[in-house]
Amino acid sequence: MIHVLVVLLLLAIWLYCLLDVLRTDESELKHLSKRAWFAVAFFGFLIGSVLWLLEGRNRRSRVHSGAPQMPPPPAGGRPVGPDDDPEFLRELERRLREGDA
Image (cartoon, rainbow, N blue to C red; front, side, top):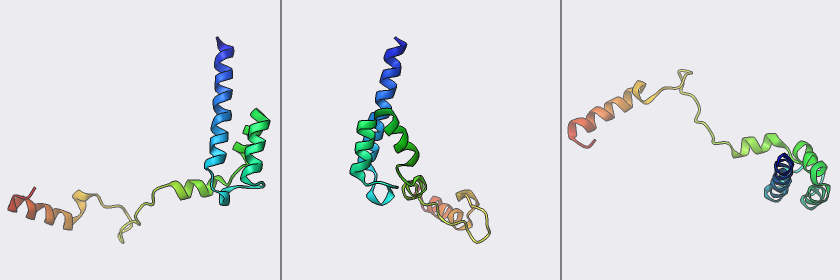
């Protein structure tokens, strides 16, 4: 049973790497073209997968490009929650008085 789990794990890693090569933008690749990385991962199986994970692409650019952009902190230097924002509180109070809330 443990042998089956190990084989399934290795197969899952291999398939992940193949799909990751296909999904990665050409500008993020290091050292080789997309076709070459796919061939390395496909024919190299475990060694090719490890090479892809370690050296296939520039990880930094992917993390920064895929991460949501945070708004800049306010001029005071620290983030302000809605309950600390005087403008939000005034608007909330106005809406409560008018019955819009």
